[in-house]
Length: 593
Image (spheres, rainbow, N blue to C red):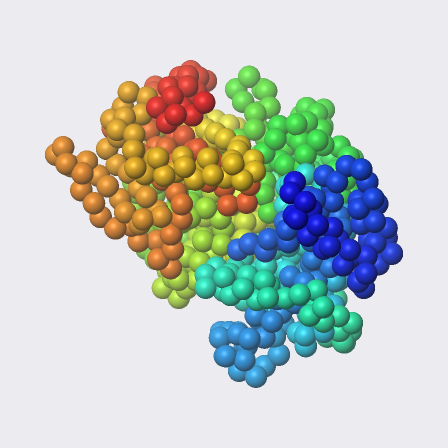
């Protein structure tokens, strides 16, 4: 590193030694400064941890580029400034001009979660903002619910979701209970970037901080019950054998309570993973998308002869579902499949019970399975496509509030939101609903796995595969940028031997379709006229390829949707293998090494 840059880093670190920081932090900074190897010092101080559109996320430790109470306080001061500014301008629907702003604060099981949550509460109170602080860890969706339930103007949840144990984070929420969308996301970022450490207000009025807990749990549990479609089938199958694990996280109490409130009586938990522990000692990574994280649950499920093994991630917004295949083996149902099953069940069973109305609609994200589109279109149900992330699903609900009735939405990354009482992905309701679906399947003499295969049989099979290409550092970022430029300037004319007949560019808001040998353009209209750096290609044989750089990590992501013939449900494994065999040819067509 150039000496001038190193001098800047050393000078920044020195301000932490000279400033109003606690003794332990100063000792850690001093140790880094005196070490022969300055790698840790450089990474901790070479920049300020970026406050993005979703908030903060980073490795915990001292320094400007780390998650610690000082960086959290600085970000909160900027968020508080923006909330008070919007309030003065009369910009909140839930607050009369001149009224006092209020927020909800929660945290999950991660190390330093309580410290960071109390730091956030203190800074808000010092800025004359009323705070509702959860007494202990709570699920992300309950924080979203509480914001709406208490008619607050914002909120913060201290969580790094399913990231490794070294991480923590900070999600900022708006008055509708969703993560912040434009223009407020940019407004908050601008305010956060203005704040210097000496600008942070602390030691707020403790009377402005109200502890909440059990009463909110009850109200949230009652809201989750509104998702239930067919209680009779649950009562007939109340002994459905369910194993649940919270992976040491925030679902440990509320999810078994919700399941029991729905009528399920045969619920078992993985005792070792019921222990609250931010070190996640029983898993390599607390991500339920990874099969390894489900091992203990599957072992208990085998011992108990369970029908289902279900997990929620540390902040209890994502889920994982494991069921038995026709060979009685445990198989993990992927995020596209769960979303497909939810939408199929909601439509068919609400119609069967006479609950479906013409104004009802479903939502999926643009990179989520097109089988869901076929289901909705054939059933005559409105389905919208939104950008990746539940804030966009929440944005659609807000856009159509009072005009149409939302009945469910999800994405491929193991998340579903079955009701509009919350505005973020919600594992308590999703877990209860998948158990209802399993109960319905059992009532019909099927397993959940067979229910899934029947959907494929009815609407066509396709296999979804995600490819992540990691390119770290500035050179990597430049390479990813060049790849996207090349795709735009030289789009593939065929993929794996199939002609490309449609392309979508969400950054340019243009769709091109091949009609009678000529490319015809038309505009793409997305929520809030928002743009996103995503490209999609559709082939004459039914392939769908989506390409997008990650907004938070140094990688470019490819989403493949690959159809294959599945004459009978017994051909599922053959169809899966046939689809996966095409992946190398697809990668070659896109120049993926």
